[in-house]
Length: 254
Image (cartoon, rainbow, N blue to C red; front, side, top):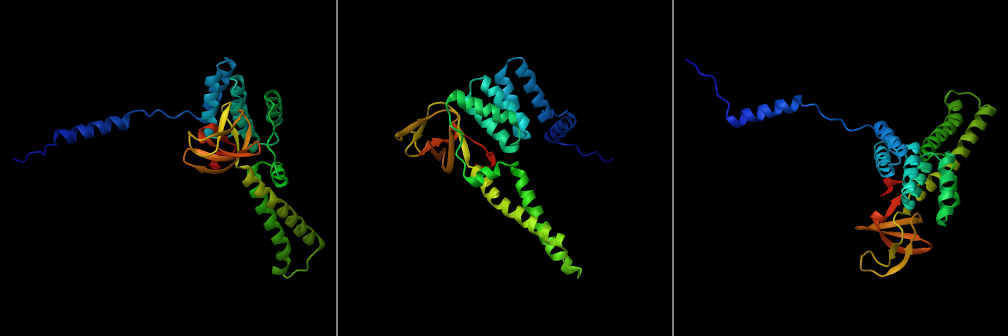
């Protein structure tokens, strides 16, 4: 008479636990749209702290100019000037045509007596279009110019006037994209001070001498990081601040 092999108790427990976990309904993380709607509801209820957190989570999952605009509005209602200016600047980074973010920034800086970031000419060009468009425009104009210049020779046809015009236009657009792309890279190093009265230190330590103190929302150029500190140029002065006290206009540049 044969006997069925008996599973050890530990093995049976593991199999039972696996079966329960397999059938347990997993709770899905809220979508960016759901978080956005939660932020809108909280904002309408004047719960600005909860609204800001919902908008921040939504923007972290799916960056969008509209979400960042609302995040800035909620932070402004909370009297968080630095966080509000950062959010509105990030909204303009994604969508420079949005007049609401531009108007809010102008109003906030006037109220807080702050200056806008100083931009080089090639950085000003980079603000003409959303940052993601410049790479597409550069690639498209380059290949348009190359195609217009070379395809007639490939097919052994005489170059027409419009071929030369298209090639010239493509190269002109491509040449415009070069400084704009450089401007995007340098402008991505912009940051904004978050808490008020932030100390700008001489060296990257908490015990270092304070060179000056920076206001919330003040713009800064990020140069390099060392540990928990970042070297910045703000108010035409070099110094170190804690990374937690500085928000980048482009978080991917950290």
